[in-house]
Image 1 (cartoon, protein in one colour):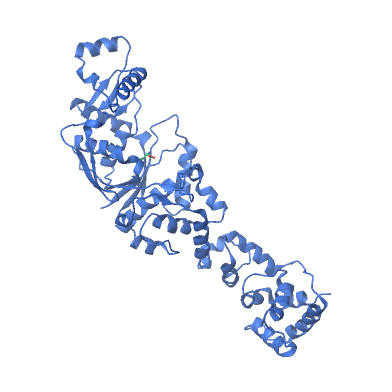
Image 2: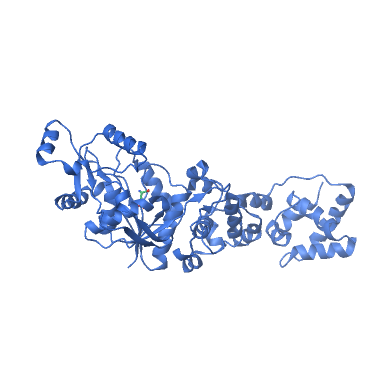
Length: 441
Ligand code: GLU
């Protein structure tokens, strides 16, 4: 059974980058008949906020990525403590007493000598007596995970291919602060074990964390999950932009972007497959980490808007009915949807159908023409195809064609120069309103 998890920290709203990660976790689980879990990484009580937890849930819900289960790290401290105690007993986690200033100084000295600023493990050389003395002085330790230096750390990343890190060049990571609070690294690895996570899908900013966490899995005697580290998103200018980090679902929602458009774009961005206006089944069927590239993927809002329009133009009435103005039925939706870039704009066209509409200036010629049109409109069959009946008859009697035939009618009937296909719109406007609009006095 494939199990993925999306693990946001509730310290802010989701942005397009982590929404993409959530989507990929969701799709991989769905593509394999697996489970998609939400893990709220709220070990940092000070920075985590309940309103962001709620926002994460509602954003995922709106996007159609409802998790199969949810866990919260803040409810799992007992679990972390038990694993921590076992790792301390096994000598894989050890107390360290340096202050932040001391560590900073050590780093500067190493950097000054042109050496990598790797922690020197001085704490490992302390005797029991020295530790007791430090603690008697009121110094409480923070805790580090002792890396095994014996062999390189390797894994075959599902996106990045073979990866190799030399643990000798890495500092033993601090896993717990002196006040007992947890840093991200160890609880995450513990949860991945306890939750049975088989695939960790996250941004490539976590690649070096993975090297460390692989040793944690090993120290816990647990088989590691597979890893897929995705290239980050860049803005349309090709740079990591501040704007991208601030773009959340609120913004897209306000712009009238459909969840389906976001799913379709973010599922394919950065892959070798084209971005297409296709449904989830098709997206899931082609979803594969092997298709992801290592270059940063470009997120372009204009591309999203275009895709959104394409998706809108095929969206069935049932999916939008509750967002349409009262009275707007399937025929009306089908008539106006080719002209929409957002569902909310359907109301404008419904206003055109129901009226009142603006009365445009018309010259004497067109006024005479419309007077004819009003008469013809009173005689045609409105039940089947009034637009072709009307224009067919007017073409024969007036000799007008093309724009001169159609445009004055469109202007009088809708108050606009452009808009949905008149053949679809006129039956909605109906005989009574049409006759009134063509009769200009
Ligand atoms: N809370 C971490 C983050 O948001 C989770 C990383 C992970 O997926 O392990 O970066």
